Amino acid sequence: MDDCADIPRKDYLGTVADLYEQNRPRYPPDVVTTILLSLQEDPIDATIADVGCGTGIFTRQLARHVEHSCRVVGVEPNTSMREQARVATAAGSGIEYKAGTAEHMPFHDGECLVITAATAASWFDRPRFYHEVVRVIRPNGVLALVQNRRAFWASESLAALESLLEEATPSYRRGTHYDPAGGFRGVDYASELAASPEFGPVIGRTWEWKQKMSASQFIGLCLSLSVAQEGIRGIGQRAFMDKLDELTQRFCDAGGAMEVPFVTELTLTTVRSKTSAIGSALEKIVGCSKRELD
Image 1 (spheres, rainbow, N blue to C red):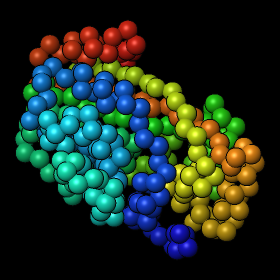
Image 2: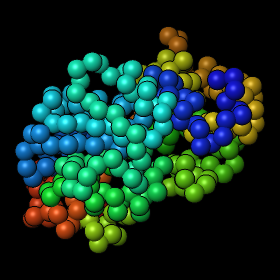
Image 3: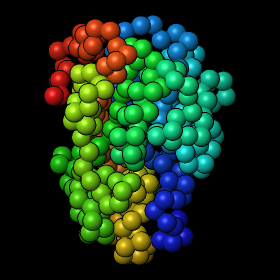
């Protein structure tokens, strides 16, 4: 990471592909289960696309669930992330990784039954992405946006990390995400989708969970964040790392580890013009734990 202070923002993902793969949290298994149960038809032989797949973390979780009954494709524009995904994916997994963007997916019209984006959609030009979803999704298909959030409101260590990130990157505020147009902004996928006449009812679910991390894993997680890379450019690598090391030492237990809380959010919807009985399957299967977002 010695040269990270000199890397333009557009190249950020390619510089931290290994850190991303090793230290980014995975997703609760129930997230994938809920997505697949929301389908109104059997997904056998269907195409599932994971867009902005990065190093393939969520793509592999999808593939393990469907066990070769579907075609699973990870779409990623960044070469380094795509190569890391291939390295991390076991031979015979059945996953394909393709170059492509959320705004120009490498699929024919109506090809995909499921389109997912896991902790990725904040990077998209979302109006163009949503338009592309309408093109490539097939009848009765589902769009699933998944987001892992650091639960800084429930953790002193994460609150301290957010304070460091805000100090090092003045344009950043906790809870916001990198915006392709510049700066950092909050995102509300449910409201965006609900406001579009092209999509049906929007269903949301959340999972709260914790992961025990070693000091090196916590530091790796932090350095995989775009805002951390921005902070390194802002105050310099040595100053940033000194502050991060001090924070980590302060909150690690005697065994050199800490519990890090996360919230995983799932936003599910369908394309109105391509769905029969709009929303009924989603609401029936999500059940009593659902909340409809208008």
